[in-house]
Image (tube, helix red, strand yellow):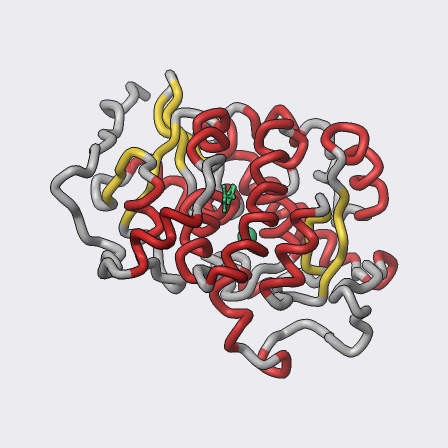
Length: 291
Ligand code: PHE
Ligand code: CO
């Protein structure tokens, strides 16, 4: 499980973060320094990659493996320059390396300009199962493939713009929840069952299964206002997942001006991560598939 960029940044001093911030440029990016990765790190990358690839056919949304094919990143830690060339041609996005979490506004500014910040460092071997801060494996494997999808790519850029606007309106706390419950932990309903499109699920061996199949968590149909009011936990599997029907729905439902929505919910109490409300539309798991 990973903490999101948006939760930690504003109150975490750089010194508490793990990356090396000494060579950061004014836009908070760094040089990737690909030659500094060790053979052991490339080997750990392959191990993490292979592990997730075993889960992807059954649990990832169909857009995900489709775009993964074009990345050719199974052999070792990829070079961002090469990926950016392909990405620019596909959807106009590129990757920038960052030392780790960066300030909210800098993050939104990058997204709005179709630059996706990817952490430079890889987790340690003993963190294969669990990591607190996002590392290069989470950022790359979880987020980058879907940036090749044109609709998703537009959503991410719109989110960046939306972030700058939410900051002006004092509504970052609400908007951060949208990132969390879609970009990080979003589920999609498909004819084949519930599938993950959130990066926190796609890069996690345990939670992708839990989100799609466990009887424990609450799954509700995507509802913007309900979602913006729902708090989340950063240190355990989610209590509630919001389910979309596809990226077209997501981009359509988030296109309207959020200013009146922020205004309306400003006075309303937040909902706890595991709270239900009478008008939730529950999404049931499909019956277990025969083995
Ligand atoms: N429509 C949103 C607004 O007016 C912008 C946005 C789009 C935010 C997509 C998030 C995701 O603020
Ligand atoms: Co992430």
